[in-house]
Length: 184
View 1 (cartoon, rainbow, N blue to C red):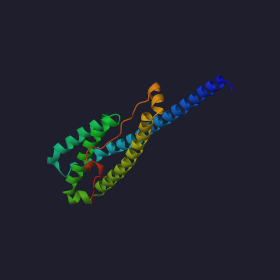
View 2 (cartoon, helix red, strand yellow):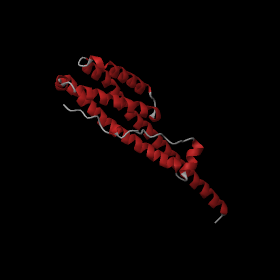
View 3 (tube, rainbow, N blue to C red):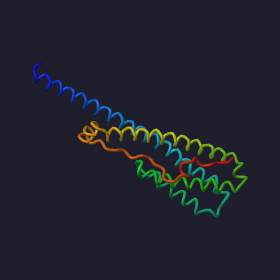
View 4 (cartoon, rainbow, N blue to C red):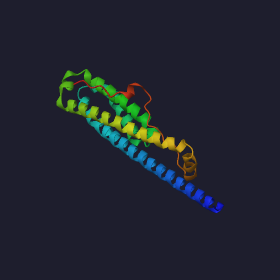
């Protein structure tokens, strides 16, 4: 066989390999974007629930104004955060403030027994569950993309085409890893 055929076959094989890896990187990058969108939707649901929950509890505890103000500021920071690296600390802070608000409500049996608070509490638990699932999907997508970006030979294609590692949406504190406990 002519050596030119081997060279042409090698170039074609490299081209096919390059395109295969490139398309896989694109697919995983889009999956990470889609997964973050799912996390973002759940975070927005949680952010939207906060003012209603605060108003429900506010009437029962006037002297806890500091908690309400802190919660409002935490919510504002969480709403403004973009991307996993800035959203994670803001959401951790907001989650802590929400747990404090629910703990405050525990001190008021009338509030705990109220239908409005009960419904809001159920919504909060549901949102936290959905958020946990969305975080898992996002972090799994990030893991897959990062593995491909860092592996050989896809690392070469990723570097040539500008693909980079994605950030995990990590939770810092062990208490944040748990769904807020709401006793009805």
